[in-house]
Length: 639
Image (cartoon, rainbow, N blue to C red; front, side, top):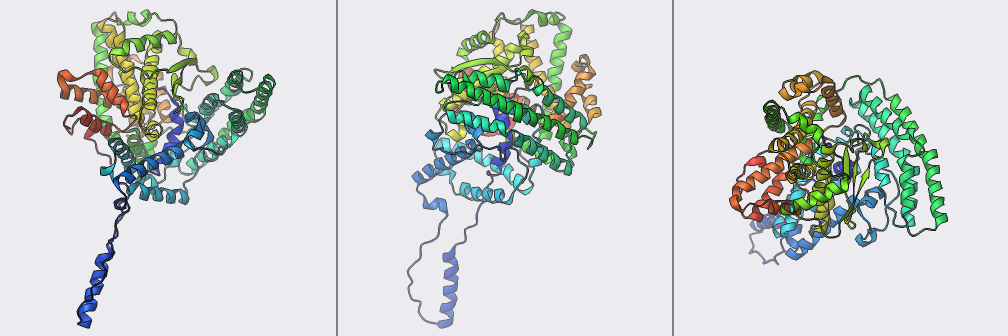
């Protein structure tokens, strides 16, 4: 399965915090003039004198009615910009990740600290800030905004609906910072390896963060202790897996990526003398050995103290508010379907795809020969990606002029992190991009082709197009959390790229059907475990009912269950995103007939940036001038 991880995974936690700011209420405006008139009439009756004409007082109006249309438009732009600035200045790491020149955005001072990087409490102050944000958001009148602003308004209003639940029932403790392959013990080294050095202050900031990395680990352990108190303890199996990953990272002290990557970057800066460079390299090594390694060692010790709280391996459905939290994740992903509705949809499609592949195997015994043949003759990932972009020119828009990219190997000490990933570039430096792949899979001919299509033709084209566009900065960065849109597009690109190869019809079907089967496989287990409440036995019962899985060893199915326990909702965006994008394509093919163009559709889809699918559907219907059918994937209602 291609469960590919991007930089925005870090910001899923931050998205929850942001969601607290995305709630709306409708204030009741009493009319003081009417009240005064009632009192006056009563007084007239008592005195029986002719009324004395009074100067009419101006009627109080709502805040948005005091503004001219132009003022509302400017105020809403300012509001979006404030949200963008707040997001990228969450901490120095986010700022460095997303912004090349902070001063151009009016950003001058961001504390160099890990404070609040891991959320360990829900505060009254935070709730009050949220309520103030709600009042501000509610002052805007959508009807007077520009068309693009109305789309941004729709996105905020979408998030508003689920944010009220988060305010009423804080659920920050459902997100473990250690659980899963994107735990902070694995994630931070990757993000720090990509910390950009544009001046000496950047280097100093990096070294300070590195020296204080234990703060994150201590907060992560504190969060786990809170989770234990609330009945959300991790099983011993999961804890031992995390311990193994943590130990693996510090086993190789000589060629650890926090040493080699730093040294590589330092030798490419042009603002330091050779002596200063060597001094910084020595500082980094000292901090690594005396701060980072002990922090990892202490993390292992503290993880050991968490052992023994439970031997059970249960999904979110077994915990208080667990299903509610899981439903909110689907809303945040950008779907209007509930998990139960998605289970029915995916179950149906999963069985169909399974039957399709099973039929291929039965009718075409030669299908097994294709696995050893390979599907291309390219020797490097660079050649692969260049080929895909050339072949895509008639059906996909080109990347903006000047875009460059590197393709790098993931360090072996972080090999469990992902099969590959694309690093979202800085918003004002989007011409520079990097894609990573797992070296353990470098010799897999088919995998490397699909990975380059997913990360390159998929994500790199997606984000460079958005960052080049005239969309507001809010639409470029703050909406990355709509991972259904993000991964749905990448899966669409991945599967479409098989059309570029000279393959037999059977071989083409083998690849596309299996890739779809893989993402549906992960999603159906995810929903079953975390929403339907499946344990291991129920999971195996379901999987064993799928004929195609008779060929998969039980050990693999069991590993899939435990991986799902560790990574709630991780597989879901790939499956629901692919289904949603395909539904959109089918909808517009039907509506436009011979006028439908895949190139035009892809251009229009990318022009909107990440957003919930029902909103994208509405916007594209207006853009293409077709009537809404109120069908397809829009029928789902969030509950």
